[in-house]
Structure formats: C-alpha cells, structure tokens
Image (cartoon, rainbow, N blue to C red; front, top):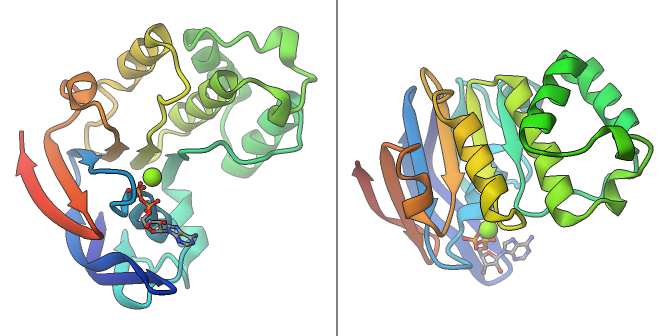
Length: 212
Ligand SMILES: Nc1ncnc2c1ncn2[C@@H]1O[C@H](COP(=O)(O)OP(=O)(O)O)[C@@H](O)[C@H]1O
Ligand SMILES: [Mg+2]
C-alpha cells in the first residue's frame, strides 16, 4: 500500500533520508525505531506529502503524496509526535472532523470515553488549552474512529500515562487486519503484541528490517 523508492530528503546540508527504499504491504504492522534524528518523522511526513523529497518517489495506494495529496490523505489516520496548534474548541473540532472525514460523532465520543477523556466537561475548551495528554487522547480517539486502511502513529504515547497507553494498545489491537500500521516508538516491548515487523533507521537509512 506504501511504496518508497530511493527517497532522499535534505534540509540544507543535513541528509535526513538517504536513498531510502522500503515497502509496506497489507497486514504489515510495523514498529519503526531508531535514535532521535534518525529520520523517522521525516519519512512519515514525506508519506503524508508534507515534505517534498529531493529525489526518489513515494506511492500510497498508487497515488503521489505531493501531486495527489487529497487521495493519499483520504486513506490515512495519523497521530503526530507533537499535537498541532488547533484553535478550535473540542465541539468545533469534532464537528469539523465529522463533516470533513464523514465520521459519526458518537464513534469519536465512544473512543474518547474508552481513553478516559472527559469530553463533556471540556467541550467548549479550545484544543490548544488542553493538557498534552488530553490532546493526545483526543487525536487518538479521532484516528481510531476514522477506520483508515493506513494508520500512522508517530510516538503517540509520549504524553500518556501507563494506564492510557494500555487503553490505547488495547483499542488498537485487532484493528491491524488488512491494513498497514506504522508505529514509531522507543519501546518495542510495549508494542510487540501489536506488530509483526521491526524496522530500524539510523542516519537517514533503514539499517534493519525484520519480520517478528
Ligand atoms: N523541518 C526541518 N528542518 C530542518 N531540519 C529538519 C527538519 N525536519 C527534520 N530535520 C532534520 O532531519 C533529521 C531527522 O529528523 P527526524 O526525521 O525528526 O528524526 P526522528 O523522527 O527519527 O527523531 C534531524 O537531523 C533533523 O534535525
Ligand atoms: Mg520523530
């Protein structure tokens, strides 16, 4: 579903991705690992069409993330490493997601409830005023509600307490069937029941790629 060929991305003199070639197919649930600065987030942002590569190509379901971004994003659920600075309040944000991605409000609220996020008493609070953990829980609830064929999580649990992490892993488990799951993490032991492939990056290259 995702095919990356000889992808290079530079920022000035920094090479963040160095001729990366990798493919993610249906039923691949991948733990993407590597030291800070290895290029994991750059790879993900390139898949999402957020960065223009210097050379090489990416196809997501056959579409180009730059030229056909809308088609690409249609099928991807994504939780970023850092929550975006959204000015909408929770009510407006859920309304927006509901309309733009055609997801039922109740489904988002159900997942939020499972993540122990109290939406009711925060419904008129703006997203950017929520705590880091609350933002992450809401983004996770939205991503789970979307039911996309490609699910990408970039260190989504950094702001979550252990209980919330367990809730998230429990909700995610079983959803990988017929999908691609890319999970950036520093904690393989936490996700090992969720994943069946382990990819390590270092200095902009894929240095190991193993089935579990
Ligand atoms: N927007 C950017 N501008 C400049 N440098 C960047 C940018 N994004 C990433 N980099 C650089 O690319 C390298 C890889 O970063 P990143 O993909 O965030 O690594 P990881 O997610 O594995 O920690 C780092 O050296 C980082 O400083
Ligand atoms: Mg990163």
